Length: 306
Image 1 (cartoon, rainbow, N blue to C red):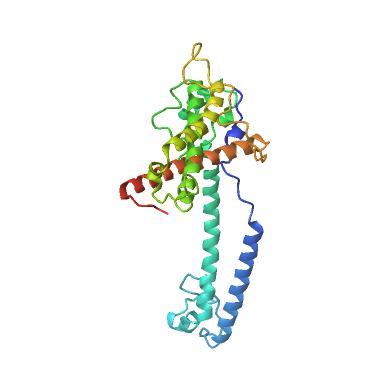
Image 2: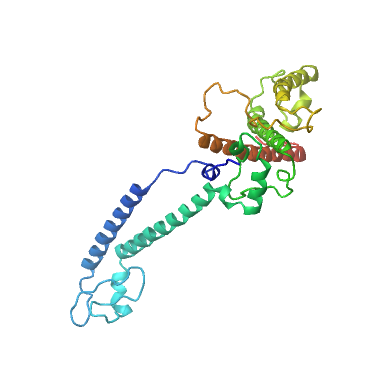
């Protein structure tokens, strides 16, 4: 089975551009500010010195106790003037912030790396099942789009690993259709409850009940026609039920591909295409939850959300 591990490990979303230059600039500014602030604080508190007249230095900024150049601990009373200086406090705070920024940067890089490689986080057993499942599928990488952290591969009931490849593609096609409709619905609820020019233009009810306010003799035919056009077209993507499995997509079909891209947004690079498919799936999944939640809230409360 020819399936590139590099392709499957491709990021679900584009990695952010390197910010090394910006980090160096910020660190340099902070270090310069700290040095200037400490010098100013020392000049203000020049009277503070040890018994031998040796100038004091900070052994570890932000961590007490301080030590003198001779190695003897400095008393807290002798440091009171220096550490209580507003400029010294600000300097210590700035240095601590810089250290936290560096630690946070390292942590964020690790998180981003794990988030970008959702497929790498899938357990080996599930991987083997999926790869075996789509062995005969033409668009293997596209079929595995949508695997992203933190959920990784979420299929607790095993819908994708216990069915035929044709049924697997059918489930993906169904998910894409529902996700696209839900994205339109989520936007439609927001717009429709504030601006509804169709069917008389006087509909001012929650979206969950808006269809009851429309003239059904004109509303339903329009809905049926809008649904029928893509559904009739999709019939040709199914396997012949008399020769194969019912409700199964042809294994050479790419789920979700309607051949409609008037703006030319489809990437030509396959890795970028898989990343875009993952984004579409994740947005569609979120939209399905959002639309269901909005309609449920309106049904329970009987009031518009927007």
